[in-house]
Length: 196
Image 1 (cartoon, rainbow, N blue to C red):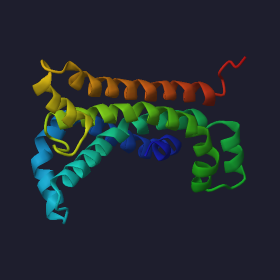
Image 2 (cartoon, rainbow, N blue to C red):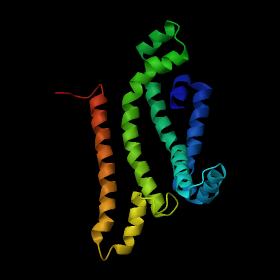
Image 3 (cartoon, rainbow, N blue to C red):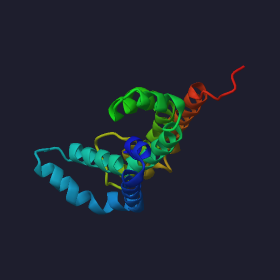
Image 4 (cartoon, helix red, strand yellow):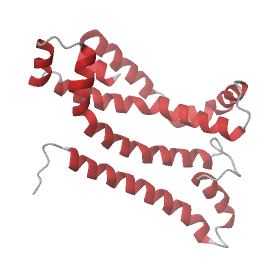
């Protein structure tokens, strides 16, 4: 969406941007909480018999549905800076189709922001899944998830505080590690980075 919207401009860009804005208007957590029962029942009616599998599919679908607009907006901005560059103009003047320009000229120059943003988006999804499991909307016990472990550990906080803090520190370490990987990838893949 971001690639097509940023490259085409005009009405395509206007409609794509409005769709991105529309999806960004919905409160993700509220939608996850409010629609969980209905959609998990719908997923189960499609042949998924296990409650946790249905809840997992639901969480993945909703996080994916509400996770793409910011990603598309970043790619759109990058494409808008690249679409008037010399290598794109040269490809278009030689008769390259839009598909060829997308996948041969633009996409290789978008790997850096795609990888960096994916490494920053992944920890947000891990935290969201843990929060949803804690709120009993996601995958439920006895299937182990970090959110389920935190939910269960609250009962034993006075007797064994480590049982509570271990999954919390695990989430923090996971989020921090992916953020550091994202920063490292950004520095490594940035062509304007100052390398000594």
